[in-house]
Image (cartoon, rainbow, N blue to C red; front, side, top):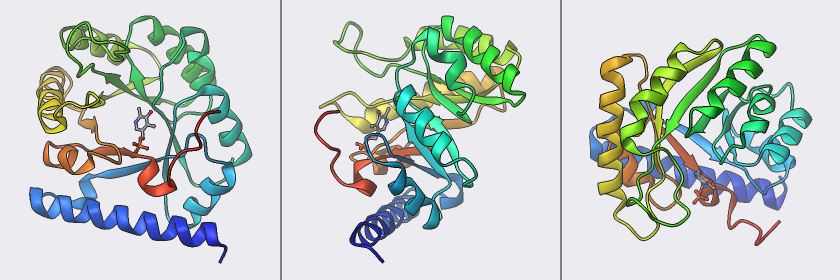
Length: 233
Ligand SMILES: *Cc1c(COP(=O)(O)O)cnc(C)c1O
């Protein structure tokens, strides 16, 4: 086994143990929680090792990089989750390889994603990204909580798209538990109108325990599995 394989196996094991332990504390069944390993900035060779170690869900946040890796690794039993900011002119292209998009934050993206999914002939899972930052915060991403109902309705009506639930990122330096509690409330509102939309994508390397305590069904974990990301690229 190469040093990198050893490294990934050890860290993946630690993260799985952390998830199991957080589930025990929260009285939850670990089978309710899907680990999406965020492989952005890391090479396709790492994704291949992770697939060998049993990882089935991987996350990427940039279209070009994601498209290249998905193409290189076609044939592996992987589900590709797009979790990054999405430009509307790229939406249709993302839908050609992604199995799920976590970051729908405005109505304009619905058309492109729907077109891409329809052309591909396979349904695309979609989550509405909810902003958990205070109103007016810099670099805020996600829809305002009060716009989520309308966005969810549009996704639910769109051909080729399946509304799965909501996604959120805890504010930098804020209280993650509090932010995920707000996300859980928005998720419950969405489920009232769309009972099948049961996914809550929340929790990263630094706050996955809080996310599990607040009901997350999908964790997006990068550096805790892959190590520190290369500085810039
Ligand atoms: C990079 C990224 C993650 C993973 O972050 P880590 O702190 O490395 O676990 C999760 N979610 C989103 C939206 C990201 O861009």
